[in-house]
Length: 72
Ligand code: HEM
Image (tube, rainbow, N blue to C red; front, side):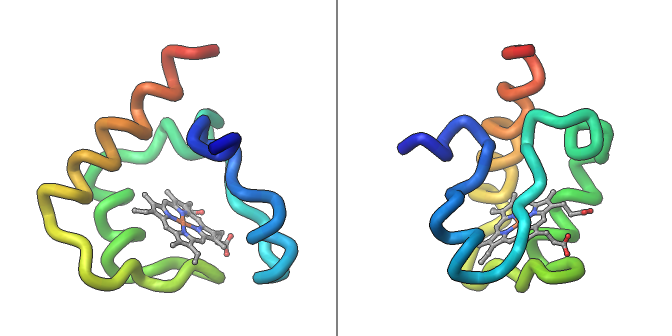
């Protein structure tokens, strides 16, 4: 999937009428794990809470998200 690189799915952004932040950006990468965890479970702004995701899956997603930082 082209958006597996953290750039978001443009078609989905259009449908939802939102902009997904770039996951390799400094804005995202500067966030602490705890903050990202809270965003996932509680939602933030136009992002809804992610339903039915386990703590360990959130940690796995954050680990994946951190790999984007090295690619710059
Ligand atoms: C585990 C999965 C996800 C992770 C780790 C994640 C992570 C994030 C992070 C870190 C932000 C930045 C929030 C901020 O500005 O402080 C964000 C924003 C956003 N996310 Fe997610 N997200 C996930 C799932 C989703 C899903 C499923 C959707 C849509 C259905 C979504 C839609 C958005 C939108 C629209 C924003 C921009 C919010 C705004 O600026 O108002 N996210 N996400």
